Image (cartoon, rainbow, N blue to C red; front, side, top):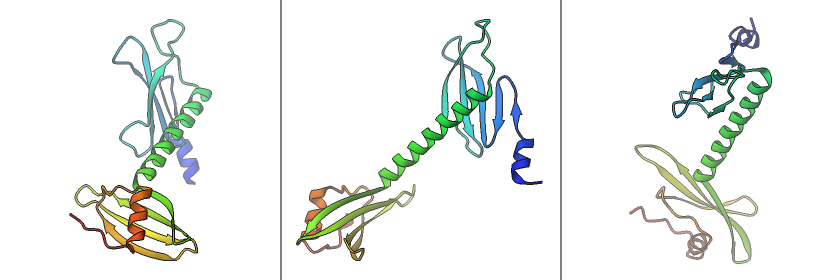
Length: 163
C-alpha cells in the first residue's frame, strides 16, 4: 500500500473533525463566549497553527459542519501562517548588509545559531566575487547595522571581543 493510499485510509470527515492530507480541523467550543472556534493542526505538531472563530449553524446553537471548501481554505490559511512564521524566524537568525569597502561591494552577514544552553553567532564578510574576506564568532546579541559593518571592515575585520 502506498503512503498516499495509506493517508487516504486515515482521513476522517465528520461534522466537527476533519483529518486529511496531514492536517486536522477540529471545531471546538469557544471558551470565551457561546460561539464556536476551529483549530488547524498539522500532523506531528503539538500546537495548532491556527485557531479562529467558526460559524454557527442554522439553529444558532451548534456549529456549522466542516465541508471541503472550508477545510481547503483553512489548510491554505494555516499553511500561510506557518510559512510567514518560518520567514520571520529566518529573518531573525540571518541578516545581511551590503557596504562599500575601498570601492568594492562587500556583504556582511550575521548568522545566529539558536541554542537554549549555548547560542552562538558568526559574522562573515564576503566580496562581490563570492570570496570570503573574514569570518569571526560574535555574541548572539550582536547588533548588525550598516555603521557597525562599515567600522568592522574599515578596521580590517578584527576578531570581535566576546565579553
